[in-house]
Image (cartoon, rainbow over all chains, first blue to last red; front, side, top):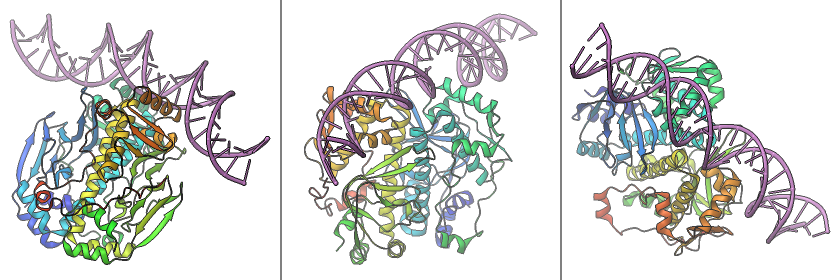
Length: 257
Length: 257
DNA sequence: CGACAGTTTGAAGCGGCTCAATCGGGGTGG
DNA sequence: CCACCCCGATTGAGCCGCTTCAAACTGTCG
């Protein structure tokens, strides 16, 4: 009954009941993708894809082969917001074994047309993503490699924590150093040295695909991390009216290495 | 009759007629802001502000005073998309003498609730901005200072051209070198040297607030500029149905130094 | 005229890059 | 069981792009 899809969108809610039932009734297929393969190609229209398991990145590759990672996608995130009205402008690639649930482009479009509350929620989702992107821009442009890395770790941990995917001071982050490098605009070698520094300073460490936060406060301080930078854009009034009404189902066991 | 507001949103259209008439009927005040002052503060809710004249930047300043410019705002652009549902996350500052037209937060919110086609258009506007941001991220992370600068010039020229604000191979760009630096994540000194290189190579030059494109093709090549990166996210089908129906009124004389 | 803001230029330093080699673990074939 | 390979992590050395500091230069405004 598409509970994950509904919950993922409802996070940006509030959805009206009719939108929720339509979403529940729409067709949904499950797709599994192996590491390194594409979940969403450039130019594809939206199918309201939701990541159920795994870890993926939005990315863009340049003519010379350089890659810039534009964001991380964790379970419960919508994959193809960029293609809601036209084709998306970037691809999404699996770092992990990923499971995606998706409907059809036709149904996605029709749902979008019929339910303003769905449109509003997705609009908020897009805005939330845009906000996150701005934080990345600030980092790429004006923060040192160390602060950037700290910021990335803060973001990833806080996001997973927010959806119940993180343990206390620990979460999965099955990436290569090359992925971190491409996310932060660094070389692999320098990324490695920065990671060492973070570990030696007792702030955080990354081993075997596990991110462990050793000193959250100092990490946040170093990063100048803004804990609101990834939060859904709730309307304060609406939030109060619907507080606690809908919550994301626990995903704790969902993201497998 | 709020023609500019309607046209600015309709660019991402199509708006339904009732939305257009509601927009036409909403209150609108004209605000002028002198250079260096804030057009939109962090945390302000949307008033459907449109820039009528001048040039502004979205920006974020760090604790140490460093500034990252997140985007340029040219006449006909909506200023406060970030605050549609909650407070915006960044401020917008005038580089220029600016004229802004805005309604009230209350009216903006009520319009948004009543007109799904308005919501859809604004959603597209947000997505378009997000797309532009991704292009900046790629530049900040993976392009050389020269290519980044070229890219910025391409973007600014192409955007102004698209709304009729650019002459052939020339447009206004009343910025300091420090602004370019903060947009590209560079120091002022290096920005200056890059500008010199660009001029000496006969690609483009910036003087007295005028950007002149000397060799568009080579500039685009150097920048790997994607001409779609700023285009509204039209639905191809809807685009065909409404082609040429509504156009942005000429703004040619509107952006005064 | 001085004051100031912005541009221009030079010189030195550093953060991060490139190149190159080694190391370690997991898989595979013999 | 070992030999081998491959991928990714690790480490070192040298270099380059860009930064920082500092000073001179220019135009504008009082």
